[in-house]
Length: 451
Ligand SMILES: C=CC1=C(C)c2cc3[nH]c(cc4nc(cc5[nH]c(cc1n2)c(C)c5CCC(=O)O)C(CCC(=O)O)=C4C)c(C)c3C=C
Ligand SMILES: [Fe+2]
Image (cartoon, rainbow, N blue to C red; front, side):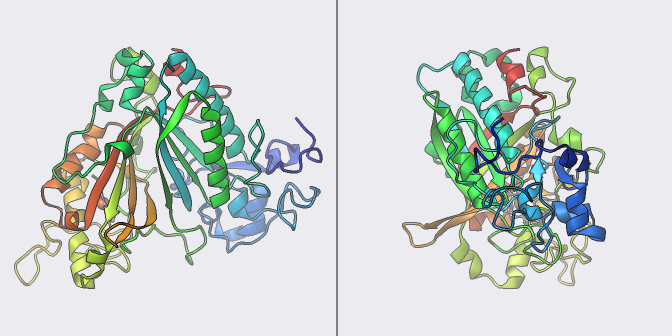
């Protein structure tokens, strides 16, 4: 490996120093099971406040001990040290790919590629190997192996995650149709769909998330370059979330309608979490689908919010649409954000307090035979549309072991009578098989492409 002085653009290199390696601990919390942070950083930043706060980025921007105190000026910021936001590193290898249970990041890019005409299994395997090599480096805060653009110069890994998936069409293109799981069958049509085929589906899907915009864009450019002649971008969407540390304490995200969004998500500590979100490592299902053991299915929808119409509603009307308060996210039946909704409670007017068409009621697992999904969205804003309204909304991304037991039944029900539906428009859609996390030296999807 090149000396840091030879390559001043080298950024955070967690494996360079034994001391740093020793200090590493794997912080497994309810919300961030795959984030690795240094014990020294924990002590140096949050101390008694605990790991969860740091992992969620609520450090108040404190500068901490750096592995680069002796690094040349510019290699890790003017002071030679990285804030915890920059230093946080998410592992590329693991049972599951990163970017599924990782806490929401502040910046995101989601994009789909189509394999180039004439490219097949061999080219796809080579591409996945190149992309995985690049993701491994960038997620560790290192430059890409080719001519690095320098866009992320000075920054640490910043919780970068890169997640790869395969669309339905990938399997024909690569001659692997017999190994395509039935869970990847196209989603049914929904009456409210206004889908743009150019911005839907695709052979390959990539999700990039980071807590720094330049780190995220750097990864985007690197992966686009690595695609070379093998694949072309079919569509790309850019999103954002609140920055870590923006709120006094870590809290559930808000969307562009101002609602607390994510409360009802299954929690990693719950006993059925894995069953709901990840394909079991050993079956069920035919052996030819075993490559997906430990993987998950992502449903991706660009959902436009009709914000001018939404903003005309009174606060009470907005809260009725969801069934929760805007300020705290508590159910309209009382309590705090985490209080269970009392769906049977009747108000003085003889009607359910949480209306029969309230979004949170209709989408609740108990109303859908237990169907549940892990929602992990980004907001988007692409300026003003031709009609003068904001082209903004939710890049809705949800994760499940089987879309027929997650997204599909819930969306079917929402499609029939969700009070929110007049304020949103589904504009694009994709369903992707996201293989398990790679082992050391493996590339994502190797068990499919070489199995
Ligand atoms: C088919 C799945 C879903 C789509 C599409 C969807 C769109 C969508 N949702 C909101 C805002 C909120 N959703 C909330 C809860 C909620 N939504 C879904 C599913 C879809 N939402 C589920 C499964 C749940 C959880 C239900 C539960 O377990 O109780 C909430 C309430 C807070 C929360 O639990 O997260 C809000 C707010 C928007 C704005 C939107 C499309 C733009
Ligand atoms: Fe929702």
